[in-house]
Length: 180
Image 1 (tube, rainbow, N blue to C red):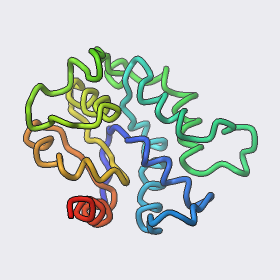
Image 2 (image 1 turned 60 degrees about the vertical axis):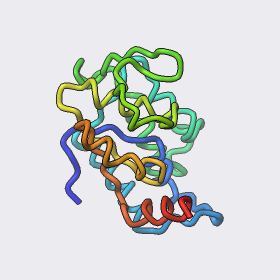
Image 3 (image 1 turned 135 degrees about the horizontal axis):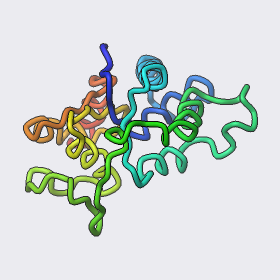
Image 4 (image 1 turned 90 degrees about the vertical axis):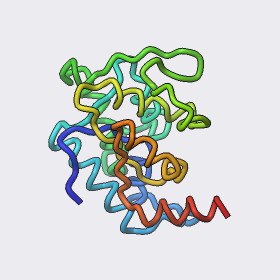
């Protein structure tokens, strides 16, 4: 899969990337998805391809879900933890256009599309859509495991917001299972 020159990464992508180093026996995530997530975070670091919000809302999701001790023992870092450290250390050097200003209002953002087709969208995930929608080039959002996004992919695409599922078969299977 060809990865974009600029993108937004859902927090589950680096979390899954860590599974190669720190497997979770209770997880049903397969090796293919884990490897795709590793490729995604490595691509972003190598190409400086990440777009964030200026208030660090996305960064805080990374910080809250990845190793809080990242950096203390480099031999123990997963790819997702290394990505978190890279974001932590480089986010203020991103161009102004790649640190998008969004306005939080209640449990949403002014930049989140005002449409009934996205009614019920997870408030914690609205930041990714708001950032993409506000950015001049509407960078795609890379998605690893969150199957709720599968149910909104067509509505988002119609609004000009692309979601790239790193392993669409996995997400579709989980989504369909939840819809049964």
